Image (cartoon, one colour):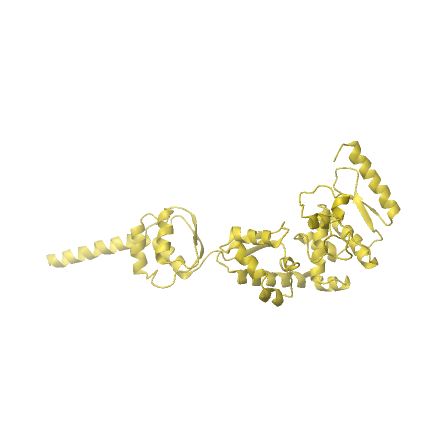
Length: 335
């Protein structure tokens, strides 16, 4: 009888200790655990231990063994852990691979390498690897792109990704989002009515984006460039000259800059440049698709600090507006 009681007592103590290891609060901080691709169980232990995530790492190891965590392939990813979770909850999440998505905002980028760096800043993917994949013949052919217009695949917005998304998965998702964008709001038909491809709309929108920060003006400026395209006139867009000269901090375009021989120099070459000079915002994209119909062919900055422009249907009016602007600059000693 006594032996039986001792055995029972021992069992109860073991059960209690086991219960405590499994169900007592174990995670001591809210934490964003990122398990790199190819990690082993030992790597996970190192991550948890070195970041002081759990109360007792030995308890975690014991329960991991009971739950057979680590016997198979460790699931990489980003896992948001909450203070107060017990060991069972923690291991169940890691074992299931039920990772939490991460939001990535893509906007305000000029070149593909800048874009890839944005993804690499938020995700596991390597910037160079993503760029290499994006510019591979396989991807360019699949999406009918070239190195100059590959940026047009990416519509600016905030998207959710798995932290361990591969380069191919990122590109595939962005291609799907691109299709969603163009199918909405009759955008495909609007582009056709302008006799522009989607890539050309994106490229023109990139010029509009760099011409003004005043959203209300964008449809009018888009209309100016569309009028010039229809007449076979040079676009003569200063932002394209800035891009051609690779001087992105340039505050004023001078005659010497206009002499740069580049397909992006729209003072020298007719039509649109070979690709976008910047990632346009949604307002700029829709400004082109919903461009204002008017007779204006010219515009220049107004002689004030509003950031708005004066428009003219002819060169005489434009020269008059330009002279007012230059006089204002001189008067205010702005160089």
